[in-house]
Length: 225
Image (cartoon, rainbow, N blue to C red; front, side, top):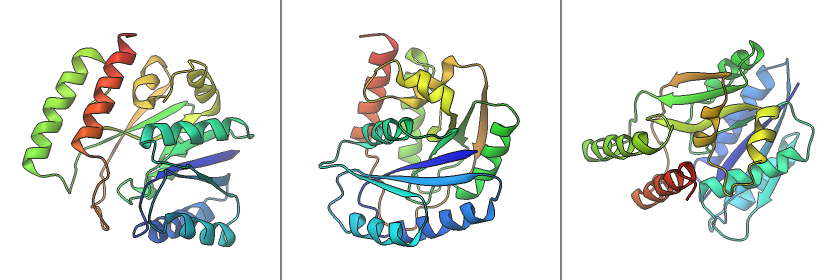
């Protein structure tokens, strides 16, 4: 089976070498499937593009999409999904490059897929870098989302999708696709609880403003506005 690992990246020059090295080890250790990395450089203005090019020369199936400007995480993921659709994959995994998504959970996600689940959605039980104020605001934020949308509290874009599910989601022609919103209309879904890692390098690019924009877009999408 062929699995594509899609990672949206924006100004992650510090974490990127460790992320790609760790991901490579995980891929090498799993002999049952073949893997490709699809890196979407979301208009980074640091050395992200150069680092990706260097690792592309070192690794096997490694594809780079360089976006001309920063479109945001959801749009970058959408571009990656469109690209993967044109190739012959059986499943996709979306994972961030900041090392907070636990790479060692990938084998668990794949085993659940092999067991028959078409979607493996992750929710985190902790957020090691979040202050009390940010945790409080997140609870209020997700409480509001829960009223209008099916999005689960503390769900993430770190997920596995069977290619048939991906194709059906992309047929909606919504741009950008909001996976955390879309996956809940499918029955064959498993929720995997994870522990997020401490951010080692830099600061989170997911600001309050971006979080609010995502929430408003989710509500509009759910209400068909």
